[in-house]
Image 1: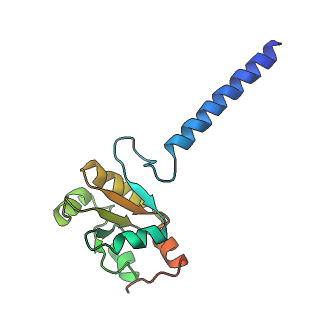
Image 2 (image 1 turned 135 degrees about the vertical axis):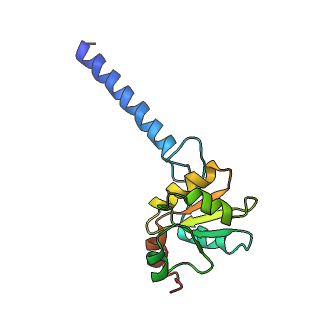
Length: 142
């Protein structure tokens, strides 16, 4: 075997290991943002089933203006961009009950989910946010 062949095989092995590592880290139901805080990403139907449970707390983490334009029925509002988000959310939420969070696209709520999970809460995030919710034909309260 030539040196070029050996180097090519070594490079391919490194790339394969990196790919497997990415798949393990960025899996759909894993927390892709922090290794220390765990939350679950749910599609629209699973999220709707979850929030039908009266024990689950529903939290909208968008701005007041976004919330007023339309939100999921029963959702409380705490803006994740507020510098005191964690303090406000922890004061509002029952720490013994699970929390379902959402935003417009799922990014801010994933950030909120990390922060809440770090506080010891059980958190689920609406994958795709309100955009996915509306695309699936689900209603918003205006």
